Length: 134
Image (cartoon, rainbow, N blue to C red; front, side, top):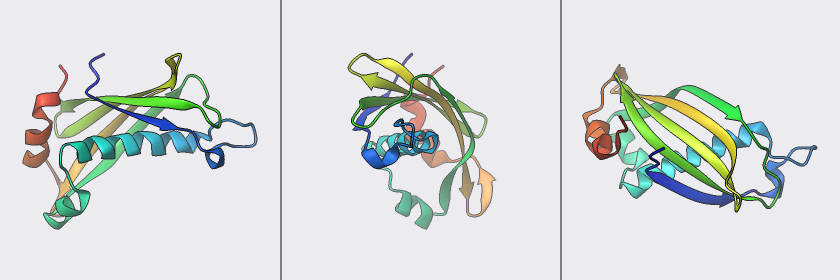
C-alpha cells in the first residue's frame, strides 16, 4: 500500500478497559488524530476552513479490529487517500510496534459542507491532488 503519512503514538492507561486492552472507541480517536496531524502537516487549519465556510465531516466509518493494543504499547498509524466523487476516502491502518502486527484497518469517508451545503471542495482537491491513490 502507498501510505502518504504516518504518526507514531503510545497507548495511555486510561484508554484501556477492564480487560486490559484499548477500548474500541479509542481507535477512532487515534485515526482521527492521524488525519488531523496529516492536515496540519499540509498547513490546513480547521478553524480557518470553518471561517471560510468549509467544514469537512465524516460521513461513514468502517473499522476492522485485528489485534488489541495494551497499555504502554507503541504503535504507528498510517494513511493514504482516494477521491470518489465528492468524497475523500481515507484508508487508515494501525500497526503495533516493533513487530508491525496489524491492529486495525479502517476506511473513513469524508465530505465537505460548504456554506451549509454539501459540495465539492476545490480547496481540498488542490491540497490532496498530489496524494490521491489510484
